[in-house]
Image (cartoon, rainbow, N blue to C red):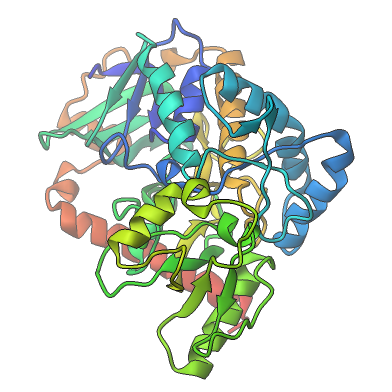
Length: 443
């Protein structure tokens, strides 16, 4: 790892990868990820990715997104995402991503709160397909250094300008690394919850650092609960049962086998109805039946879900499966504009860690991958168009511990006990969420 790069990308999910692929190939780029290379939530996305099928679909796509978001969305961001969608899909295909087709034509599926089928998919592992293909392209770039198990523990910033990040390397060493621009694409906040579909190491690091350094946040208390995760008494990441299952015709049943909700309502509405039914029935879950799906082979349409449920003792072709809501997605985050610029100079954010306003108060199904790709590309193109400003770094700065303390107010002893450090960051986020909840309820 060098001391200085043109760009640092924090995160190797679809946002980090797509940004890397749209930066100049003669720029020196560092990409880091806190976990292993396949431990980004991008890998976990099952359902698919939305796309504008034709101009005739624009108005309904826009309205579906706004309605799901309770009309708290930023309209200009929604417009940009939708109008950019076809170009993004074309790029993904050029990078080797395979979407399901029939007779040479894309197949589209539907999920809750969509008024029509507009979701492209690859079996029930769309996120894995996209992320793997993008990572393969990134690995071909000789100008990109990708380091796993390498953690951002602080921002190197002063006078509302970000100069780099403080990194904890895999061997435990703390190293300052500088760059002209930094992109935060480090995922959501599922790791601060007991029950989440997210990887546990995704603990909202960018949010905690934003709170520490007075970087603007937005809607930090807007957290989406997914209605259907596989119920388990095990203490582990919750396995998602994709909304596409309900989009294809699966139904939710109470303890008596009676249907109690329209399964294609927005996620927050379905979640509330499930919780009400659980309370009414005095149960820890409700049932999901896929036997109502008649027009396709569910073992082939949802092979990953079929396999996982079998491992847990449920045959989805014969059995109802127990499902329960769990934390799934974060609509708030680090505030960014249409170019994914934060309120701090030379600092960008994209993906689940940011809030560009696309999702409003509740994300429309399968908009997450699309939103991440569109705005990560915007960030990269804005960086590429900007004049390099590495001259702002002091030529005499030798990155000693003393200089870090004097120039960036960094005390390396703060990071010696990482467990305590992480606990402090989690508490910062919880306190802010609680404060925003109280404000919204006018307590």
